[in-house]
Length: 262
Ligand SMILES: Nc1ncnc2c1ncn2[C@@H]1O[C@H](COP(=O)(O)OP(=O)(O)OP(=O)(O)O)[C@@H](O)[C@H]1O
Ligand SMILES: [Mg+2]
Image (cartoon, rainbow, N blue to C red; front, side, top):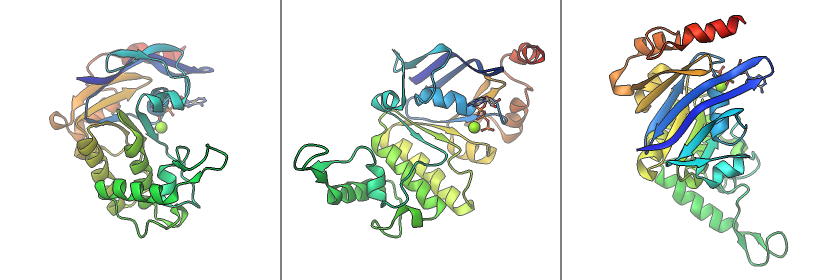
């Protein structure tokens, strides 16, 4: 079953054609990796899925129904959560407050008046969510700003896992992490997928991690899809060749490179 399909997505930034009619299909409940060289269009593509940018052309379908996102709220409303590279966490708040950031439960009164933040409920629900995911933090009261990169990343992933009901998008979630913290985040990604039944779309430059954690790999090159592989049926060597434009399924490169010349 296809959870999300993107078809013929195009996006131009001035002279740069970042996406030249790219297709992507993310299956239900899978970890799907998106790989490709710098500038291939990966971040631009996932920004169209999370509603951050509007494509110039192309269509998105979620569970077979066409969707149009005019902003991140629309994508969130459809169950798509994004873990941004800068994580967008509030450093002076604890993990619970961060998980509920912008969606805080209120106790008593009307929102914005009389009502006040139900901090104990946030801590309680956050602690359940974090425990479910096997995330260990020094303390639930600790400010996120005092945590390590891996712990902060785990809080950001947990937040996406709490709210995401369809797809969790992550743009290079382990880029700034050490070996051990990377392992923690990779296993967290798998657990989110397995426990919640949501799909994860993961951008990564680390082929070994991709092969370790992903079910399916889409290779992008020059703003198009160059290949799709089951992780079990491919190798580091093949993925590296595909990223370089060798041995792909289609032959879009001649055309794309000709466009580049123009
Ligand atoms: N806001 C923008 N304004 C102008 N050009 C942009 C913008 N965002 C992306 N681009 C261009 O679009 C192309 C694709 O960029 P994108 O960030 O999607 O690549 P990427 O595959 O994520 O690369 P990386 O692996 O380096 O993160 C690049 O040529 C980039 O310079
Ligand atoms: Mg990028």
